[in-house]
Length: 133
Ligand SMILES: [Fe+2]
Image (tube, rainbow, N blue to C red):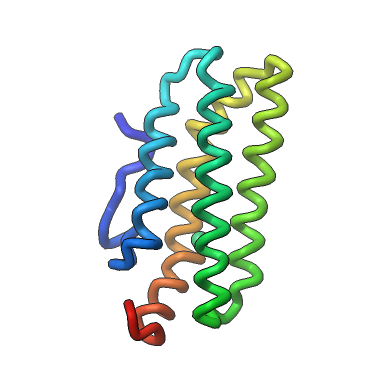
């Protein structure tokens, strides 16, 4: 069973630039379920580079659109990137069980909480204030 189920109503914004990288994150996390120990490092590396691309791009959009309270949203993004960097170091030191637990527990939990709180607020701001949306 997938760790995260994409839901258009819960996760989608109807803006491809926001939704496509978010769907890619869901794909990457779901593909990490059941990973072997030796697969963790390359998978975390791929996840990290995707997160840097996706979340930094979302931060730039928020800046451009003048989204209120974006500092807190930005902090949640930065915190996740830092966590994944830390986990990568732990995995490189052979602490594989930490990596497996992080995939199953923290990544799906972060995604749902972030979607319901920060991203939901962003989507409602965008649909009310950004003409291209
Ligand atoms: Fe976000």
